[in-house]
Image (tube, rainbow, N blue to C red):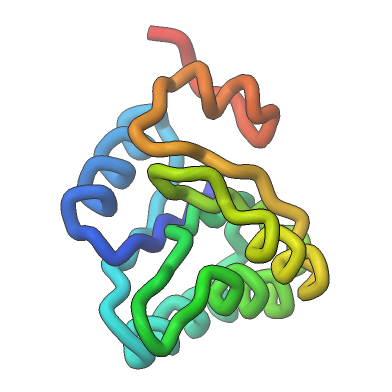
Length: 127
């Protein structure tokens, strides 16, 4: 599968990239630090079709948690969105995402391999 990973913490991006490529997936990852990187992510979404986008629930200005997933979904409606965070998505953020047409799943960090399998988004090999 082709996966997109976007987070504002380099350690999370590196970990997710190593983990998911180790499971045999094609991964493009970004450590987001502002509007220029957001534009780079969206450019990549225009160039490639991703099966799944694993996106941090950003709270760094000027981004809100709903901005990037909504923009990805507009450019690539078939891409499944997974919001990553250490705390559950607030109901207001979930409602805003749904109003933007983003159907999403949530991955609480840190996570176990089985969490991704039970989400039903994709299967990973059992080693």
